[in-house]
Image (cartoon, rainbow, N blue to C red; front, side):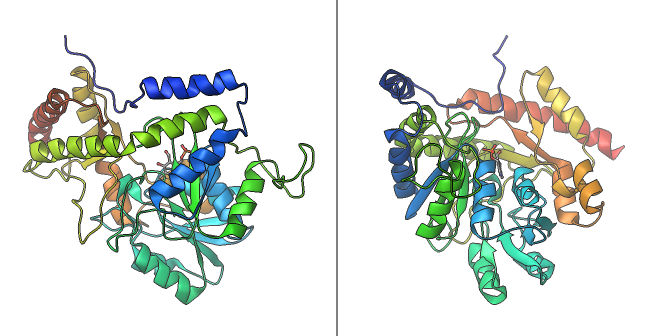
Length: 379
Ligand SMILES: Cc1ncc(COP(=O)(O)O)c(C=O)c1O
């Protein structure tokens, strides 16, 4: 019997083991030398002037929104087609996430729809580089300048992505937030990083992640409200080891994506992730397809599971989640592109060490499920 194929699997080797062991043996498990080393290395890799490590992407989004001044009653225009944390981060500050529809090709927040959603109360734009494809930041920067808005980028899925103008995602200057959960391009188990250019914002994020302390303060001195959003030295050591192999891991993800694209192109009605266009480069994170109209997604997932292949719907529309409907009165039909994509999208197994034979098995499993279910849908 062939082995099961999981959705994701991190690349962890001896370098990571050694790095973590060294921290354990040093006895300094938090706020040690690995923190600054990881931040410097990450900033340099992304091409950003500054970086603050935090305990998760979610924590980074929260602190970044606070840092740019988002507070109670403000509106933050963002994408309904994202992981729920990007919208939740606004709610943490009693601000209102205001959704606008997405582009049907890139699946990123549509700049024209975002512009139409801006009101007097809008304080910030929060574009998400979904599935690692660069959002149209030049357009959002024009909108932000015209309406005097801040920008926070959710780059949690987009390490390694590059904009059409050659600027890597995370290096445009406004706070950009990366996530290091175990399925990400680089993992520290849990963790995140805010890259940015403004030293004043960096100082604020540094302090607020560390219980509101300034760098020169004692352990029990606090001059502002803060959180414990620190990233441990153990996690930072893991991150440093992962950074050293990042280029290789990204290349492997791109290789797997190429195999999927070659094997899945031409299946009637099946939509694949958009290819890089106009100079934009995706930082491959997941391989998400949209099933042909009318195909039963749950049945597709069950058919793949019978072949020991994991898959999952990815992502649900945030505005249709029960608590968003209840809290903010969102309803079906408001963001039709997002709703259509969310209803048909399916994440396939995708990780750097995936072998050609495994990709082939997924392709064959999906092909045969769709052959059966497409004819069922058309009767
Ligand atoms: C688009 C997006 N935003 C935010 C997050 C939150 O990151 P974390 O899980 O590290 O808190 C994720 C992670 O899954 C994500 O994919």
